[in-house]
Length: 367
Image 1 (cartoon, rainbow, N blue to C red):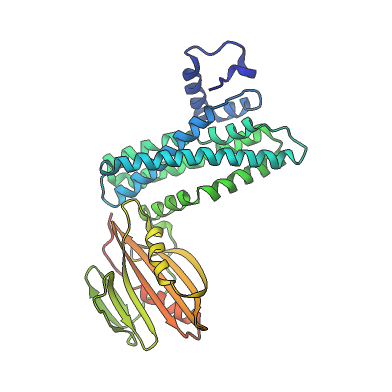
Image 2: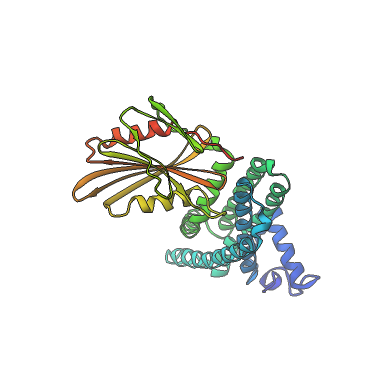
């Protein structure tokens, strides 16, 4: 680990050696970000950024996973080995991603022939901006002890993430003129979202699960008709739909018309899965065998449930098909309303009818 005194603060290493220096730099990056950013142009940090990114990635993974488990009413201690392995692999991925993003940003910016940005500077600016993420496990500890504190802990995590983004902006601006700093920031954020999109998605769905009010409401008037109270959910369907449950494994219920079907499917998910994973599992089955598949996904809320809303337009043997799937998760249970409209003349009308039925959906919500 190359210490900060090289090319910066003098020839003598700091008292306490490399570990003391590393601790001091991490604290400075978190507590005095402007001062740290100002040192990037004149000091070398070497492998220190590798350690910061590794541990920051582990902290991020552990925090999100603990939030998911606590929201589902499960004990994180029962999954400790899985949590640590996932955290380590995310830390490694964050390291590799940060190096690739830094290299890409350096090459693009140096191609402009208006900067001598070094790889060490680009990598350090990116990795040490992640230092505030080291605080995230504090929120995880709080929710393990006091599960009711999930919303407050979630707000703390959001503030830490915003602080990390602000630190990244300060770091990049300290080593580049404004126009190039803006370009570099866009490259780093775009690359980061590309390689860590799964974690961004998990964090988003976890936030929705903790605070359903963050999701927009499903814009549909509840359907009128017959109400069906089944095992652990209820639905109201217009008169043209008839109950046709056949006891097929995995189906909680089935409703049919002359041409259309609604299957209420049970989704099986692992303890650490969020609602999008449940939805993907069912959607793959529903889309099997179709051609020209085009799918759009949004997130909505209805009756206290967070819905993953997938709208698919496809065809089979030249016949138009409209699929609309609403997936909700309560605790460890996942249910999906999978609508299939065949030979549909008006896709919008079919999707609207599905939304109206989904607006009547009620099931116990785990808290």
